[in-house]
Amino acid sequence: MLNEGIVITNEDQRILFVNSRFGEMTGIPQQDLLGADISEFYSEKEWEFLAQQIAVVRHQGRHRYEFLLPQKDGGRLPVIISSRILQNSGGEFRIITASDISEQARIAKELHDTLLQGFVGASMQLHVAADRLPDDSPAKPPVNHILELMGQVIEEGRNAVRGLRLTENGSNDLAEAFARVPQELGAGDEIDFRVIVAGQPRSLHPVLRDEVYRLGREALANAFRHSRAGRSSVSLASSTFLKR
Image 1 (tube, rainbow, N blue to C red):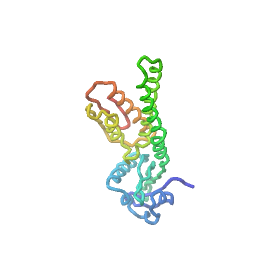
Image 2: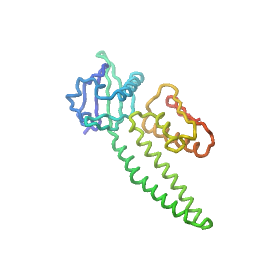
Image 3: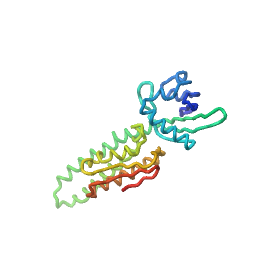
Image 4: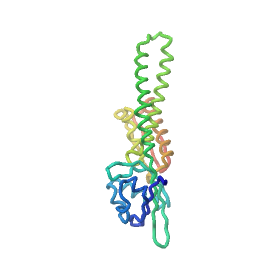
């Protein structure tokens, strides 16, 4: 069974074809979708984002990005949208495929609610035990080393979960994600932090985007913890990431 929703629209954004899988994903019957203006099914903010992606498709011929697909019951289904333009004597047509990535979101939740929380709980208990050890105890250094390792594992786990959940705001926006980092690290009031965006923002492939975010967040975490600088910034230029 085909697991991707497929939609074909004309240059006026009218839906010419929709398969049954897309109807299942949205909860909207095929007959209600056919002939409709696709923008009718999205909020103003959602359509503003989609219009930007359509512009990219028209410029490049094809495009791939993440999105939260609205459902009839009010839910939002995380998907990866692949879109391309076909042109012939009959006009311009856009072919859209939507791939369900809700399993990815489920994994992120399970990682946070089980494995990651378990590490945090164990780390807190070990901290209590370490505080009770005399300063001259031979067990003190190895216990402190274990605490450092656990802290690194917890931080890496949080980064992985944030990467998996980046799509939940529906924007696939690295600038917004980086802007939240100081608050997440507890440095929001101590550092003058700015995110500088140069050029036309572009949606990145999920794997590339998550790797850029992971590396950038790690660099910022190190800067906030070990530097006494009162000002820091991240610059995003098209697909190029530059840390200052």
